[in-house]
Image 1 (tube, rainbow, N blue to C red):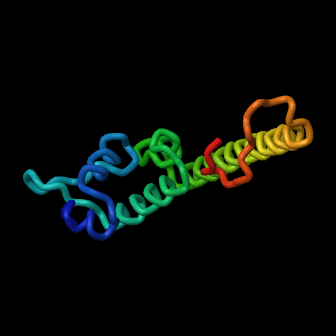
Image 2 (cartoon, one colour; image 1 turned 120 degrees about the vertical axis):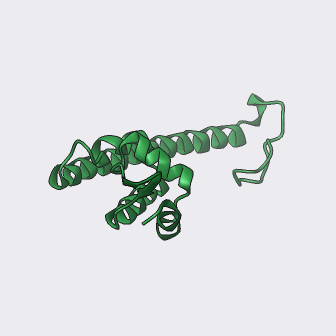
Amino acid sequence: MYIGELSKRSGASRKAIYLYEQMGLIQKPTRKGSYRIYDDVIVQQIQTIRCAQALGFKLKELLEALASNTSDSDSSMTLMLQQIELKRLTIQSQIDKANAQLKLLNEFQNELLHSPELMNCEIPVDSSPKGKL
């Protein structure tokens, strides 16, 4: 299929497809004159890339696992599973840090509410994150 059809079927722009190709995330297509001819399997590969990006993966993170020119199917799957586990651990660490920060903020707020002489300003009652201080 030509790049226009691939773009429609995969949901990726032509520019994104060229980038994936350049980075080695998808196989270089065969050529018919000056036209690129893509295999049907590329649609699924691009959808996998787009799904991973939606889940927070950067293209660089996907490169080793999805580089079509250097990995067989089994090792690609193993590498992708490793990347997923690493991303999961990273997100969990960020959640843990955010929860610790929320706990400290709550403690600080409670201290200020019980000892207002520590500050000369009013503490807002609005506890929403968008509340102005």
